[in-house]
Image (cartoon, rainbow, N blue to C red; front, side, top):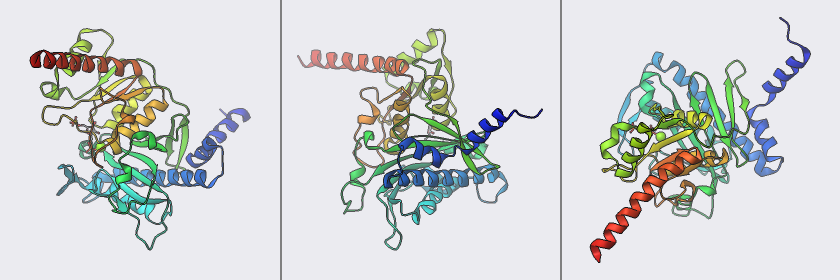
Length: 353
Ligand code: AHM
Ligand code: MG
């Protein structure tokens, strides 16, 4: 069957809505800043395409999978794909003249653009491969990113000016390497998703202004940590077990679990544990960028006690508990945590009186 002219025009229009065109349209400007942000998004898309290409063939390429034998600044074993993806972002941005530094989950200190290269005004923060335990078994992983403007001089070269809350982010997003490669971003004007069309080599607009339902059926948490949690989180999980309408989904890669919740509603939880009260997820590279997106989509992100976007990290690799998703579901988790905290304070007050 031949498509009608109107249908053809629609398809053409869609195919032409590439990521860079979309960013410029969102900013409604051709100012230097708009051009920079559009160019940065383009470079991130290029990094996403390179990582996607490597992942697609990783099982066939000698030395692409497995561990390097090193341990990163977080004390976690480094995978070869972590190193590859980290270096991809550096190579893509090094000569771009767009950023002054890149800070990543995999590097102890930010990477500063060398003096013989053009230096830009922005900092890229990123988690090159999020969910790396999924890499070797061909399951979905992601890359998470945020863009901030450098503030001050950073004379000591340790990125102290990055220790500010998440409301300082200019843009954030992720690339999800799944059955298709998807890029989701926000520059503070809604959340939009793009799918990589491999035949064009372009990210094409898939959905604009994504909004999360105010409540959803999914709760996503590693219940293997049940006995490591505080009573409040155990109480919350007992609550969802006893009530109809909840379903558990946990894929071991935050980007995938988050994406499901963004589209279908519900809540993702990574609480603190007895050994790690601050949880596992890193504020600057994981929690804050996703919190930026979820607020833009009409949802909520919390540590249990305060909004993630209000948290000021005390170090680059700071971690926080993370509860993120539909507003009502996050508020329900918060109510369990805050009730327990109130009871604890009462107990302390009685004990000391
Ligand atoms: P990574 O960035 O080192 O891969 O760690 C983060 C990942 C998240 O993607 C995921 O939500 C979480 O760690 C899974 O942790 P766990 O295996 O403890 O459930
Ligand atoms: Mg990660």
